[in-house]
View (spheres, protein in one colour):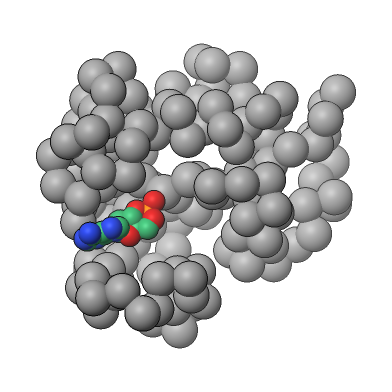
Length: 144
Ligand code: CMP
């Protein structure tokens, strides 16, 4: 199964030194890292990534927050990685995230929630293509 998801450590996660912790959790769980880069995305790129949220009142603040420092963009692959990855991140609002999840263990503010994960198999493919500029089918590390 070639399911991939896009996981991003947001600027606050990078600044707080949580990149290794987040990678460790996904690797320990058994998922495979098939793409990883540190970058400072442009506002235009972030607006594409968050296009669905354009009408929300928090959108300008979200773009500003996401532009406040470098992010670590990752593509992870494995069985049910989209759904399981979301479960590992915890609820979007950290106050509703269970302890043991990444957000539930490391943050309390929805506007500073450390990480992002694709919310469906389709958006996983779309976001990996948007951030890595490659068709997900091109990854050579695909496993059963
Ligand atoms: P993410 O998983 O990246 O998906 C959309 C992001 O919008 C979310 O995490 C939060 O960072 C942000 N977000 C969602 N709801 C709110 C809100 N009510 N106030 C501020 N930011 C929000």
